[in-house]
Length: 385
Image 1 (cartoon, rainbow, N blue to C red):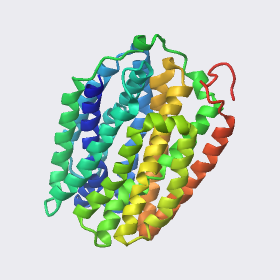
Image 2: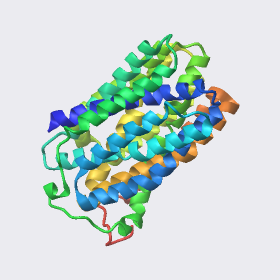
Image 3: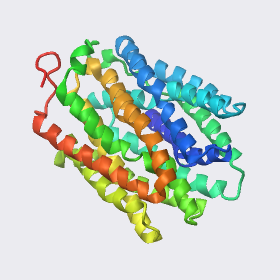
């Protein structure tokens, strides 16, 4: 089971490792401005916000995560194919929304499937998830090297090819259903009324959402100050190396720092990272700042996953995972990404200061979360904390 899940994570993040750093460059080659790119990347999350919870709710009731991931992978590949014929902003917008609807639930459902297997002792989540980070790093390094000097249209072909690998590996996923952990679907409304859960969504969402400037415009910014695509690939990859180390020792880490502590660590490191990213032009310092990605993303992600695993009843696990993706990584990204495009157009690298403020706000909310969470399962439907 560990091997099959690891292979899927590997191909999933191989595709993401090509898409995230280089897709804005492909969009720029189609004549889109920074503001247009920010609006396009942000608009794709609208259907993610609506669609992912619906799909996850169906999965909580049905229990078959593997079949859902397989179908979503198929339609994601078809959606990427639409970009080959999309001409003009409106066509690109339609293709982006389509891809976001089908691709967005894959990550949360895969995490949910893996965490359910982890709860039964069949796998170690961190040791499985690290293969996604390994693939992401390889994609960033090798993608940057391979694309150096080549036409931007190759970016689309790389995204298509790696998405095809996701579909192929989806056939290998184990069937881990809700019956495996002896649970049943529970009503969703009490979860939506839980104050502590919303503190988690907002705090973790702002910490992760502070990465939007990095995801959308760091490659463009670094190119503008004369850094080559090859070096940019290494800059993207260096942080993932630290992330891999953290995931490899996730079990040990969680014995020393609880999930909310990891969220605090990620948000605090974000304040430091984004304060200096937009003004740093020394490569040595940039590599140091990028190494913080292992904390700003890695620690925060690990904290969020294990908060959900520990605090949410199993019968709501897919729904809660999807709500985290839709609100924290969807709604907040949908608002922040277009704003990042506008800020980058106006201020260039100095726009990263806004991300430092965003991460700092998340830090304050997570402190409030730490004071209100009893470090056990949320009292869903019993007390609105």
